[in-house]
Amino acid sequence: MSAPNAAPANSTNSAARLRRILVADDNLDAGETLAMLLRLDGHEVHVATDGLQALDLFARVHPDVAILDIGMPGLSGHEVARRIRDLRNEQPVTLIAITGWGQQADKDRAAASGFDHHFTKPVEPTVLSELLLK
Image (cartoon, rainbow, N blue to C red):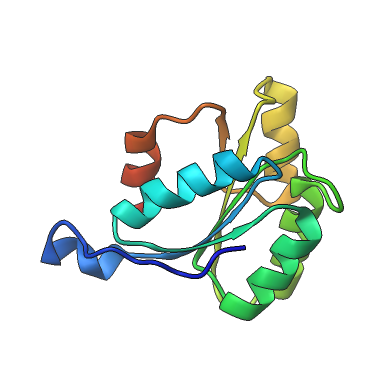
């Protein structure tokens, strides 16, 4: 788990769109690399390495966006997404699945679990950046 390390935004216009983000991936290197890229865009990022840790961190930092790997130990990304949806009815949160599983059935299951977006690894950083700035 890492503490927030927000970098200054590239422009003052983007400051209104900066997000508090939870990244959960059991591959620590992948999670930290994604977090670093997001911090370069000015976002506040917190990293978890399994599903249970992701839920705990979610409850403590109240992120605007959760980027979840699907195949994590403890709880899968699907289960984490379902539990987040149960916890966060009063305030919107964007759930993004980033996974190695990219068949249509995988995308359908992600949507049924509560994900707003589904990306297959590796994700082009500019695609994710553009989505987060909307």
